[in-house]
Structure formats: C-alpha cells, structure tokens
Length: 149
Image (cartoon, rainbow, N blue to C red):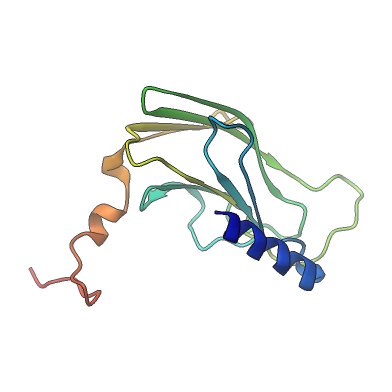
C-alpha cells in the first residue's frame, strides 16, 4: 500500500495539470485503507469486486467533484460507510475536464456485510460476499476464457 501512495503522489507532482490521480489514506489504526480517484473505470454506483468496495459518482463535467467519507463504523465483520458528494464551490474556476470521481476501500478477507449510505440522498446499499463480482471471475480458466456451458 505504501508503494501505491508513492506512485500516486509522484504522478500528481510530475503531471500537475490533472490534479492528483489518486490519494490513499488510512485515518486511524482500526479503519480500512481508502483510495480516492478522479478517474474510475467502475460504473456509477456501489459495487464490490475482488474484495474491494467501490463508490463511483459517474461522469462529472469539471474538476472539483469528489467523495467525502463523513462516517465509518465497523464491528463483527460488518462495515458501514456514510459519504457525501463534494461539488465545486459556486463561482470558483474549475478545469473543464470530464472526471469520474470514485472511492475504493479494500475489505478484509473475512467481511460479511457492508452498508453504504449517501448522506445527500439517503440512498442505501447493503452488500454481502455474494455480491462480490469475483464470483463470476471464479468460473474463468487460467487462460482467462470462460468455459462453454
């Protein structure tokens, strides 16, 4: 994880036009590592893929959008994240570039449930290991080809 942090910071320093590609932070010892990105390949919404929770806002018209985690709780292999969308301040100049802000959280191997709440809209997602997209990937062979049914 330290390597990822250094790599992202180096990219932000060498290419200042794109405003930091990602930021990885761990707030406290008992909190899970999170990465925040300006460009995300995930579809808009909340998904789990190979044990990584992704909260993606989808396409936004300018820089200045992002995700702020306003609450995080955990207990008995269950995790809860409350987030809100950060928007550009009115009247502030922003780079006219399409962004796709997202946040990713690496879940521990023993997780049983994740609840994600959008503080702005009240929308709530409840995910279990059965929702992890790696279930589909597990059917692929080592060559990456899905066997015929």
